[in-house]
Image (tube, rainbow, N blue to C red):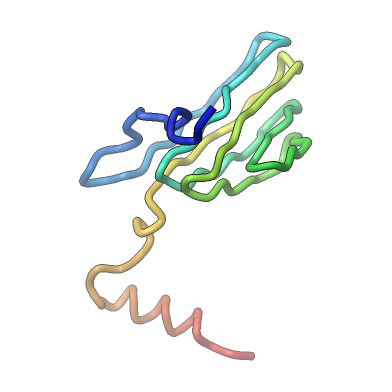
Length: 117
């Protein structure tokens, strides 16, 4: 199957605010999110339970407390046999966290990031 066929077409957030978060709780021992990708970055935080998260060609065991970053346009899927799996997903455009205007917040943040110890 070609990668383009696996593109998730669901809109996450709005054009004005390209950010979406949601919480998923399973109650089945055959939970499955099929292989897909999207043009946004995704953070996945596992609260409880276990699953296998495939990102690209690597599969990672995930458990409560784990946090994963899935880059834009990266193929990924989730499988779980744990009926107690619970996780949060945050999907956003990476440039959501860039500053379009150089204001005081930008100045303070960028100066902290540029400090060398």
